[in-house]
Length: 403
Ligand SMILES: Cc1ncc(COP(=O)(O)O)c(C=O)c1O
Image (cartoon, protein in one colour):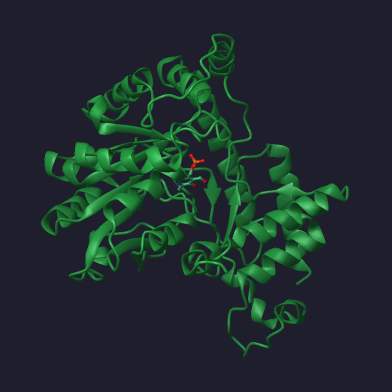
């Protein structure tokens, strides 16, 4: 009954954890969530006011599928101001969130059998979105620092390679690709005529230095790049569902045709709120970044104090991605029981078992590295209060000591 296309999509690994955490919370348990991928701040007041005004002004009808002119103009100004990128409104398409923009971008440029280079660890949805476009995700392992290099990408180049996915700062690792490497990746893409889908939704959360959009490096790479961004993380607007893309006119045209049949326009009220977010005061972004930086330092130093856990300092986003390989989980009888398989001595047992047991016993929600293609790690979001970070880390320490 169900299409092959739908059947090939694997349910998100994070879903089981999230569902379980919700159930425990509903039962009245004191769950500490390090699993969430969204800022815990409220949408800024000026943005909320713009949304309310849009409703009161009856701005509640269909808009053009690619977005209202005011929003496209605000996005063009943002690209100029923040990314040194010149785009005209015809190069811009808005959408129902960054995820939606990514989905439509893959649909617009990928044909059956096309290979897409995907750095590991990756954000979960890329894999399934590429497959839904009938493309083949080609996994490219990054090193211990999680920063993909041009050389690593080159090693997986074939005649079928069509595109590269970049996500800097990265979810899950927080790694930021430095400008020198970005230049080499751009040269590699231009030389081989590869599209670059550059997911820059965490651009504002870089704690040392400044974000560089790969499209801004030169006009050749700009032609090949689809820059994806969203209001969700930067302005704490995850529920409003506004994302956007900048690309060559032909690509935007194809995406527009697809979106016009799939979703019509992004929510009219949210578009008005997005205009205010982009054009209005940016204090909220600075405040959020300062809070995240403090929490990051608290979380990283706390994690590194736990025997067997080792955490690099992430340069961006709001996640830590520590290694738990030092815990020697294969020797834990309890965890072996959960996984149902007896692993041989020395085998690393699994971040998924670790995650489930941690949630069941200590009510702390984290995401296993397997969800992002990198076993031996867990992802913890620090988009939560300092109090929760301290309490959660204390529980993880107790849990680890009891293994
Ligand atoms: C790397 C990355 N890209 C895109 C998105 C999608 O964001 P949005 O909520 O705007 O769809 C997320 C959200 O978690 C993300 O982590």
